[in-house]
Image 1 (cartoon, rainbow, N blue to C red):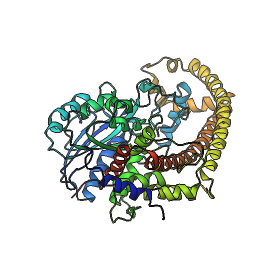
Image 2: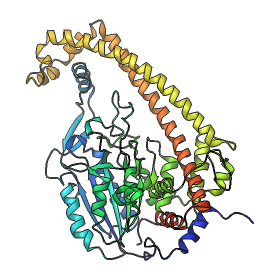
Image 3: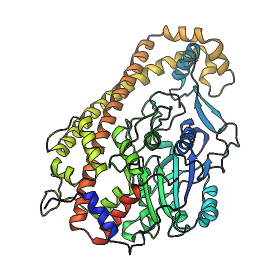
Image 4: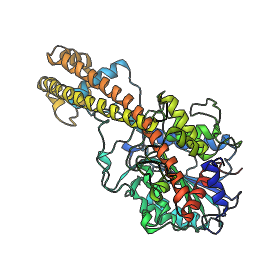
Length: 526
């Protein structure tokens, strides 16, 4: 008898488990949306985050969902004229001034300005007080079985990682490619709200617990380390404590231990891309810049669901994101993969044919699509992907060593420029001296000519270009590495789902099936 595809088996299991509290949400339940967005302070409140909010509005409009109840909270809600960081495009003369300023301080960002938030009809600032008040009032008033879609676009971190050590993803700059420190508690990651303490997964779970237990919650979170919030499935974000009573699923830009892409003050860049960009484009069929694209339908059910949008991002996004869902997290907490395929279980050595046979339509699309993108073929694709990751890690290690060597040359040559420069123009050597800006603007040509006449200038220029080239090479390798990681993550999810269905607890099987059904729905009913 032919094996029934895993996805259909899951749907049948869901139908067999009506006794679970997770089941039974009405098909046309009332939908309420709430958006929290922005950084914790002006220096981290990039224009791109504001644009994500506006893009979500346009997506709802295209989907004829603009009439849904939707409250948006962003940064300081426009109260300050200096809350949003933007990028200004400098003239050639200003670029020369920037070059001189970089000799004095390599971390200078003279192309950054600040303006007020510019989103009309905001409900308020994205503070912890506003979030808690929303759950205490609007959240508690939601009718039973309503759907709540919570969208967060901002920054995230871990409880052991201060904001100053975070890579916001997409900002670039020398040294931004350096690996982040290991995460001590990857389950309890954070989202950063305006002028507020970091909000951890367990803190956020306390807010969700204020809702009626029948409220059907869907999270869309695009911050760094956002995957930690998949653990709102569990009491205290801990699977050992058991599942919560509330209906929760979600889509996250990155795993709990990794950064995400998309925080930039320059929204006009042609290569601007992050999780929301692909997700909303797939749902609406309209890209951020207004171009129409075919709406994906990987399971051929005649609609573009949240699962379709998520799959589209995994397949097409050329970023550092490693997207996951709540069902992915649940699998990793309830099933395992043996080293060897046997007794009906898929092991780490599972063939591509076996993985493809066990995959649901979305997983199958990812495995096949990334195989084509990465030139993977044959039955040992997972092993080949791991080998390629090892080679990429080796190459990136070589780049790191070159980078460290060139960076020493850069720092030394910069110092050999800075010292004589500040001897000739001593005001430039005094931090925040009132004459500094006047000198930089009025004597640009003389300053630049002076630097070009110093012996260290060619070395400085060459080292600067070499660092930029090395970082560009590393970015290419990192994005390639990420696609291999996405392939392996999906392959593991297929094996884990198959093993759960083959030998797992019936209740866990039904919960996983229900999570899949919740993920494979449209954004909202019209």
